[in-house]
Image (cartoon, rainbow, N blue to C red):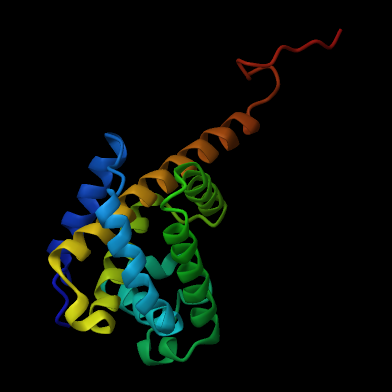
Length: 200
């Protein structure tokens, strides 16, 4: 589809890099990258509903297994039907809202970290594992290139990739923390190492 990172090999590379960054503390966008992201967002935000739909339709085209996470779209084979789905539009807008909040908090690291960690924790309850998070960043990048036209550069692509890798590493951390917390809660009081049974 004309996207520099469309195709499974490039997306796998994007995903692998994200996994490596998560293990070794993902890089945070530098000041120049933050400014590029914010400037490009001013153009992107005018088409957020369109970008959200394109992003998820492309996600389901390139990674059909992702539909399993979405109860409403699990059995939908007709991608044209997805393009007109109110539910997909609503979810796309929620994701774009998260991206907008992330962009706005790039200058406030503690608030951005809290936002991404919390989203990762909530994705545990949606049964949406971390292996899918990086796919959304890759599809976002493909969806915004045509909107930004001549403004799109290799440096801007790298800036957005850096932001998504940072955010998805935090979401992964939040997911893992919630997973550990739920396992701990599932243990009986006698099995919990940090709780003493004080009943007589």
